[in-house]
Length: 635
Figure (cartoon, rainbow, N blue to C red):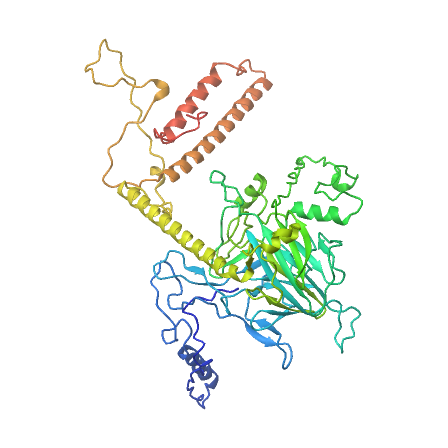
C-alpha cells in the first residue's frame, strides 16, 4: 500500500470528519485582463489552502531527521486505510479506492515516517483497521468485494483469490471460514449456467491472485463441489463436499523456522528488505523449477517428478549452429535445482468440526531457491537510472514469506473469516493426535495449536524488530563512514562519498613534465662517503625529485594519474606500430629499386631504433610511483 506516514492512532470517540475550512476567494475583477486575473486568483487560493505538510494542518509535526525530505508531514502509527465504495445501495460489500493493490509483479506495505533523529526515513506501520487478522487490502484481487471490517468476501465472475494479512512461518495454526454462499448454489435472479463455488487452502506469496487455489505448487486447495484436494491443478479424492452454511476449519503445521547460515552470504534464509517511501518491492517470481513441475504434471505422458525437458532437439532454424564469423557458443542453461520441502509439515481440514484427515504432507519450502552464480552476475549488472527506482528480484527472505490462508471465490460466492479465539466448531485440543488416530488424544486438555488471531501481534513485533535492526545497522554504517572520512581528511586524502574534482585544464607544456635523467656516474675507486647511495643502472633510471614549486599546476589525483599513464601507453604503442610499418615500407622500396642496402629481418638497426624509442617513451611519460603497479611490457 502507498506509504501513509504514521502518527498516533485515530481517536474513534471524536467526531467523524471535521468540516473542511472555507477560504474566501475574491471574485475576478471585471476588466480586460480577466483571464490573467483569474489565474492569479486561483494561484492565490491554492497557495492559501493548507496542505498536510503545512504548519497549519492539524497533526503536522516538524522532524529533525537526517535527510527526511518531508519534515512537516504527519507521523502516523496506522495508515489511513482505503476508501470504501458500496457495490450497490444497501450492500455490505464494497470495492476499495485510494489503495495500492499487489499486481503487475509489485507489492506494497504500509509505511510511515520514522522517529526524529533516525537514519532511515520510514518504518513499518499497521493498516487500518488494525489489531486483528482479516483480509489484506493490498494482497487480493480487485475483483473481490470486501466488507468494511475485512472479514467478509464476495466473489465475481471467474475465480479470484485473496490472502489474509499475516503469514504463517512455523508452528501449528487454525482458522475457520464460513461459507455463506457456495457449493454450486445460484441466486434467485441469476441466469448463470454454473453456480457459486469456493476453494479454501493455504498459499505462498508467489501464488497468483487471479487464479484458484491449487493451480500450481505455490498453493493447496480444498474444492467445495466434490470434496477433492488439489495442487498443481491435479485434484484427488479427499473428503466430504461442502456448501452454503458449512464451516470449514483449516489447520496447518510447519516445522521450526531454519536459521540462516552465518558463513553463507547467499543463504536464502537471510533477511533482506527493500525500503523506500512507499515500501514498494518487486514480488517474488515463480521459479523455473516449479514451472517445469507444473508442465510435467499437466502432461500425463510424462512423470510427475521435476525433471528437465528432453535433450533431443528438433532440426529447426533455432537449433542450426550459426556459421557467421561472429557466432558465439550457445550458453547452456543452468540445471534445474531440486525443490526443497518442509519435512513433517502438513495441512488438514475440518467440515463442521469433523476432521477430514491430512490432505497434504511435506509442503514446499516457502523460502526462495538458492541463487546460482549466473543470476547473481546479471543482477549485479543492473543499475538504477537517474531519478527512477529500479527494483531487482530479492533472493532472500523479506520477513513476509510464509503460508497465508488463501481464499478463492467463483460466481458470487461469499465467505466470512473467523480467526478465533472463539470458533463456531472448536477443534480438539490435540489435533495431531486426532489426525494420527490416537485414542488417548481425546483426554488431552492442553491445547497444542494456536488460533490464527494470535499471529497478528507476533507478526507485527517481528516487523518492528527488523526496523530496529536495520536502523542500528544504518547508524553503525554512518558512524563508520564518518570515522573513515575524518581519518582520510587528517591524512590529506579525499573523504568517502565525496565526488572527485573534475580534471582541470593545464598548459600543454605542463601536461607531462620531463623528469631529468641523472648522468651516468663516473667510475671511482671508492665512494666518497659510506652513506652515499649508488647510482642506478641504465634500465632503472629514475627522475630526480624536484622541490615543489611555489606556484605550479594542480596536483593530479591517483585516479587521474593512472588514466593519463594509460592513455600515454596507448599512444606510444600506436607510434611504435607506425614506426615498424615505415621501416618495412622503406626496406621494401629499397629492395624494389635494386639497392644493395636493406634492413635485415633481425639485425642491429631495428634493435637500436627500438631502444631509442623506449628511451623517448620514458622521457615523455611520468615515472611510475613506487606503490603503483605498471605494465611490465612498457616499463
